[in-house]
Length: 439
Image 1 (tube, rainbow, N blue to C red):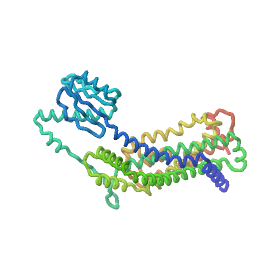
Image 2 (image 1 turned 30 degrees about the vertical axis):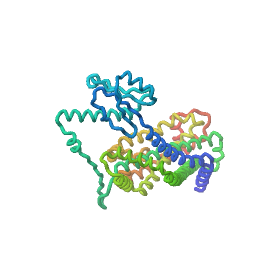
Image 3 (image 1 turned 180 degrees about the vertical axis):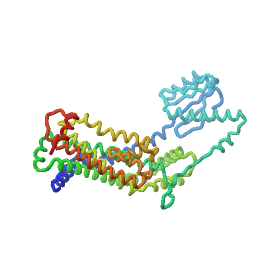
Image 4 (image 1 turned 60 degrees about the vertical axis):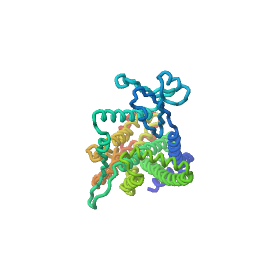
């Protein structure tokens, strides 16, 4: 056991002291904060970029009825179509919306410009024109449009969860968001840190260092120490990312609040986005309260605890397989034939999880995906925010631990032989022979 601890210590400190580790640890939070700041900057600039739409309406139906929006400014023009196009060339960046008198039969409404319009511009114009035509047809049919608008129902169904302790709020949106983030982090970390284990094994094998190491420790101890050491590196990096991200967000928010002009623009932009997402017309205070209630439905300590367990369980299973692959090859280019079968369960579960499990977390496929050790780290993290029975969670954890023990045993039997094999093209048949070799 002491030898395994020494290997864990070596793997951990040799990696956390590398410049690449320090660079990625500090750079990733800064990149995320930078992308967030860039997104805000782009939103602010795009909000100031108004499109001038010249409307030549020969039908007379839409004249003075198209409403200006935050990104569109309508201006009615007179004259013929050809002259309007010539005038358009004199004004760079404007658009000409041409509505002929026979638009209903000819269906030849056009928008003309030097540059192609964006989809949002066309969508906003089409939406307004369809609403104007709908009101016109209703009035012609003798129907009061005001009565129809008042009769349109506006429902807001609130999810409630009943438990033995009583009822509590249940935000489906918050559950989906938390499940997606947790599953994505596990999905990415298994690839990143599992690949580090594989590269470490290949490096030691090709440099023949492993021949010296296995003279003092058993191959299983070497593999286990390498897996646990790199796993601790991953947990350390996660913790530092959380701390650094929180610090950078706090510092950026402080600087951001001091800039009154930028703050006002973003607040107004936020109100516009909230209105688009909230057609029922709730006040800003109601929206903030709803978001606060949604966040309060998430049991953060429970989510973090289960996340750490499934991260470690999934990492231990897949890193053992990655270590076996690394021991079977002489360079990284030869790993492709073995990598696909290993990574397919992860890719399959992530795709199915966000499309099936998130929409129906209690279905049979969701249950079985959360029980199979190779798929449970992702599937279960998607299900947990929605609420999973205690017996299902316990059974999934037992299967995951059993899967790790079995996978490590299988991988170690391949590792003990492959780590000392050089210059030979490895196949699946060869791996089966290595597994069957007796101690």
